Length: 115
Image (tube, rainbow, N blue to C red; front, top):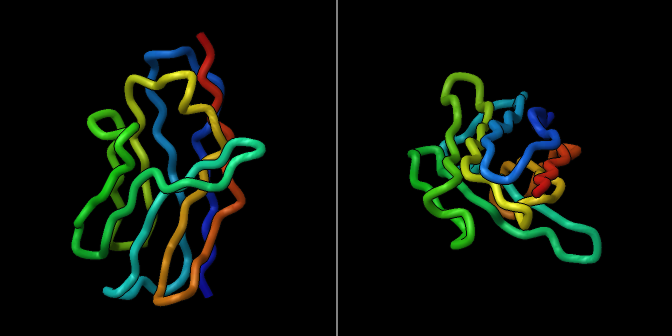
């Protein structure tokens, strides 16, 4: 059973940085993909970044060059370093582990960027 718990969100000013963490439990398989998604009220949850077990990364265009996803191979924890935050980055951020057709989600952490 996979359990994910996010932390690190908060209220920051535009231009600041935040580092989100996702504490993971459960065995990590080489076929797993890990990721961060975000959601604002009234909109669908959207992909921010993913990383494979082997370290291959993908980013949504709006965050390329500003956000960096990583994970700890030893415990499966997932991280998102967010730099140069913009007001439009405001959302609830969710970590994810995808195994085949199954998705595991954390409860989310709020990130609010003010002007």
